[in-house]
Structure formats: structure tokens, C-alpha cells
Image 1 (spheres, one colour):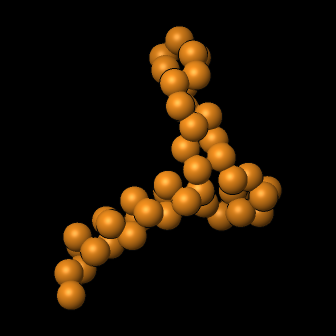
Image 2 (tube, one colour):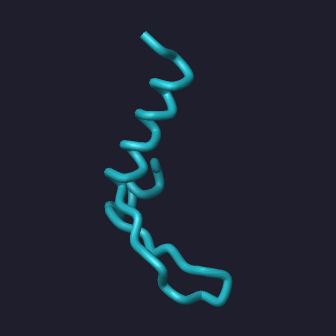
Image 3 (cartoon, rainbow, N blue to C red):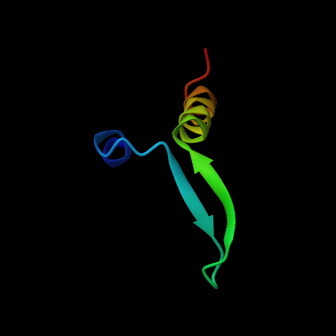
Length: 44
């Protein structure tokens, strides 16, 4: 995530084993998942 921020990259391609584009993941997607994982690991 630091590299994405430093390079001002907001989206990354998601490819399958053959290199075919199957989706796009955004910086926000990653942040949302990280927040969910932290909530699960450290419940209130």
C-alpha cells in the first residue's frame, strides 16, 4: 500500500493464471478489507 501511495497508483489489475484481466482492485477496496480484518482481530 505504501508503494501504491508513493507512486500515486489508485487501481491495480487482477489477472488469472493466463494473464487475462478478470478485475480491478482499488486502494479503497484494500483499505476496506484491512479495516474489516482489524475489526475481526481486535473486536471492541
